[in-house]
Image: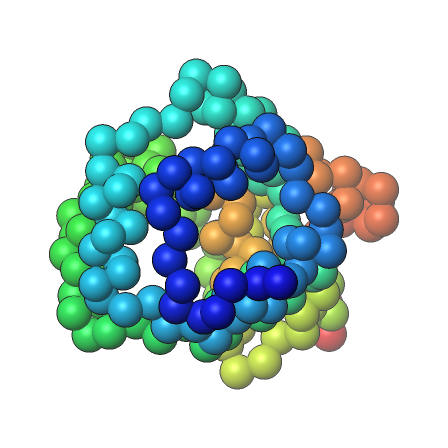
Length: 224
């Protein structure tokens, strides 16, 4: 029989429960029940502070860091599946941050992801100029060639125009000897290409070569 709501175990009992479950993986059914019971629950400021104090000074072990690193390496550059995105979205529903908490989050992030501190920083290449031939007319020929759809997620162009992505990440393509490879991407998919660039370059190059015979835009005057 479960203890009544609000009942508090002694420190000794909590340690016994903790040791009993240590090293034992939770079943999917147990995880589902825990997730459902926590959904929509609002953690009080007092409870947040207790959690924060209990975690202060604690550091993950070397074994845990290696496991996290291995998981991160397998995920890097790969988009989440639709099922995982829906699961994350459901988990976040009902969470309400106080104004004070929002201000703390904002203050903690301020300046941390600017310039050289940003994880997508590539030495300032974003300030380099584009080839003069990479103009609005050329971009429209790329979008039209792919029927105004994002080549990664398939989303059609709506009010905002699709972004034309340099597959080889060379802004002077069309003005130099680089092979001109371009694809239209929605803003969300385009932001992903800033990480693990080799993966995205190989992916889009194969797509253009295998599906379109190396073509990725209409010649001038052939816009459809």
